[in-house]
Structure formats: structure tokens, C-alpha cells
Length: 147
Length: 147
DNA sequence: GTCAATGTAACCAAAATAGTTACATCAAGG
DNA sequence: CCTTGATGTAACTATTTTGGTTACATTGAC
Image (cartoon, rainbow over all chains, first blue to last red; front, top):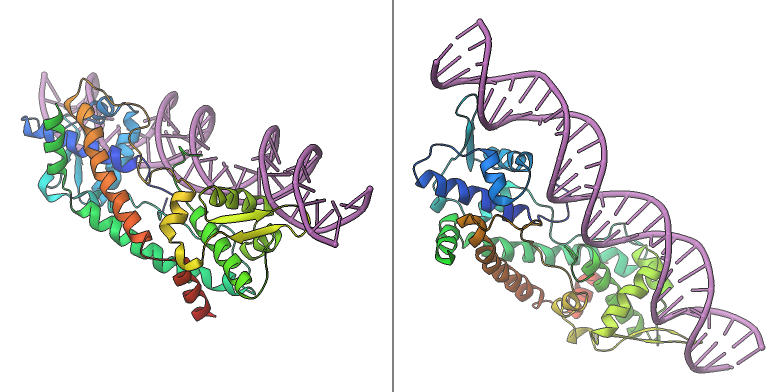
């Protein structure tokens, strides 16, 4: 999973799930089930459980088992940024180097890796900085505004 | 190809190829063949030709056919930024929305798409801004410095 | 006309993500 | 203490994307 190519829709689904739980709790419910969330996301409950398990590991969500089981937030929506969510799902790098290692005898083949890595590090930093700007509270506000 | 999820290693390969051509031309050669480039990149010449064809469409590279055929730069390395290359290969978005459309009856399912799209637009803009900072001349300088 | 390269279609392989089924496990509450 | 409704997780399948390969028509300087 750590060598994956892209977070793809995982960040969208994760933000959707957490925002859903947050709104549901705000309406007075204790916990949300993976089935309820899956219905809103339009996917399989197992996909939600797997994703929420990763978010729990990162300290963003929590779950209860047994009767009256379900999911809850581990922090307020306002205390969770999209960067937190992004890092919780451990996406692979946005850009990858060569699949097969280039010819090290060649000057370009030898030096291109480090050169591009430096650039890609800057890109990832910019991406993270941008994601850090938005909290799930911001997302929920936008969501309710659109309704 | 325009609905792809990630540029992945394509930006790396494209930058590698163009830098290689630039250095080769700087050493007095007129054109570079896809086979020479493929050797340095360690891939199949067809992969290089396909990629360079996209770069040609974007006005970054040019090719000659017949005897003495091969590839050349359409602009100086210093006049090509990594953003130019990135846009030339038309990568899919870094983040995707839901694969299956979420439940529009649900408030969150209805509003989450636009909310996340706004965020993702900001991320893409930051990413592009970062890529625009580096030219292939910068890349070549780093490459030669590492040698 | 020869020949070495591009141009491009068609296909195959590999990797990652998403979706599905199945079932063990848990814990509240009767 | 046992029923019940949920989580936890493994195993499998399907889909998508990317990269690699083969094959062959086309080009144009010599």
C-alpha cells in the first residue's frame, strides 16, 4: 500500500465518511454504522470499514464493537485537516521515478533520479501545504451551503 | 489516456528524454534516435516514441523521418519548464471524486463533490506552480553536478 | 531503390484500487 | 447466558491504468 501510485478517490471517500459521521453526531447520534456511511458513499460497507480502520490508526476516528456498535470521530471536525486525512491513508507518491532503473553509465541516466526527486519533494510539500489549509469543518460548511 | 489517474513515471521519463536530447545536441549532434534514448531510460523505443509524439504535439520536441531520422528539441532547455512537460503529457487529476456517484438524497452525498473539487483545484494549482519553477536547464545542471 | 529510422495499431503483462463474499469476534441487553 | 447486530479481516474477483512488446507500414536522404 505504501508503494501505491495514487490516493485517487480514497481521500474523497475518507473525507466523505468523516464528514458524514461528524454531521450525524452533531444531530444527536452516538455512533454511525459502516452500512449507513456506505449508503451515502454508494459503496460496500467493507470498503468503509477498511478505510476507517486506517483513520483510526491515525487517531482520527474510533469504533465500538458489540451491540450498539459503530463509528465516531476521535476529534472535532475543526481539528482535522485534509492533510491529516491524506497522511492517514498513506498514499504513494504523486510522481514516481523510472520503473526500471536507467542506465547508470549514462550521465543523464545517472543524475536524473536525484534531480527529479528534489523537484518531486517540493511538489509534495506544496501539495501538503495546500491540503493543510482546509479542515473537515470547512468541508462540512461547504457541503451544507450547497444543500 | 486523458482520463488516466496519474502521470506516474511519465513525467520522469519525459524529462529524462528531453534532457538527454538537449545534452546530445549540445555535444554537436543534430538528432537523437528513440533507440538511444530508450537505452538511457532503460525501456522500449516505442515507449519513447509515443511519449515524444505527445511532446511534439505540445510544441516541445520535433522529429525527422527517413534516413538520418531522429528527434530534436523544438525549444531551448531553458525555455521548457516541467509544467510545460506536465501539461504536454495530459495527466489525469491527482485526486479523483467517487468512482460511483454518491447518494444525492443525502446532504453530504450531494454536497461533497463540489466541496472537494474546490480543494483539489487548489492542490492542482499549487502543484503546477511548483513545477513551473524548474526548467529543463535546471534539471540538466543538477544532472551534471551529480556526475 | 536501399535502409534506418519514425508512426502507430494491436496486444500482453503487471500493479493498484475497488468491490464482494464469508465468517470469526465482540459486547450490550434481554 | 445467549441472542443480536455490528465490527474486524481474510480471500477472492473485477476493473482500471500503465508500461512493455511485436509487427509492420511509411518516410526520405543517400
